[in-house]
Image (tube, rainbow, N blue to C red; front, side):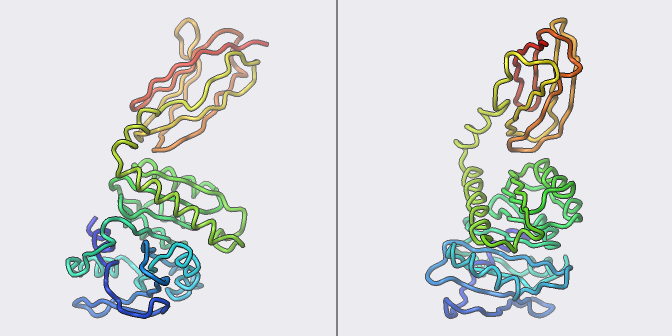
Length: 310
């Protein structure tokens, strides 16, 4: 939380440079200077993007990542800040600088993280309700360094595989609102419409951030938690039941199929985070007859009847 508080406060530094300029700036601490790349779209910025670059691949620098993000900053009328820092010691130095000097308009939550590759490790440490993150091509070690904090929004853009699904589940179980978008390209950043794609993802982050701070919207979401559809009243044996479940409170959820004798004939337990999840129930081993599908979890106990026939 201390790191995040400083990041948000730091964003309000008055740079007094040409609004179209791309410059390297720095702040000082006892060990020396901490540099960052800066760009600002013309006019007063509507938001700030904190670009975290992939230092492990060898293909990126703060300048290169910053230049790639300029079209996005222009489209969103944003101020862009890309720290040169690498490693936890540098982040701790950054956080230790007195944030009071930098308090200003951006401390109210108009900033987002945009991370690439290995920098997802640092994004997972920095997110909080006022600082959501768009994470592109995260590395596997991001899963293991996730800190628990108050709910925020996280958008993952990558090829969907076991690692990314694991990262999505880790964020969700930590209480965050998560969306995972599959990319068909080898690298999800380098596609023809990457500006529009990232702009769309950041709009989603903004909408969730707004909802998180609106108690009425949160209450409405919680009130609609549960199964998102209706089980068909009659199914042929072997036909799958495909359903969605809307979760407001992360935790363990139990899906049961119960016969007319009140016996549980099928059961699966899932650890689910906030958001909408999909599951299926196989019926090929169920005898003909009437059954009840039950979903039980935090704030949820839904029941629906269905019949299996030939």
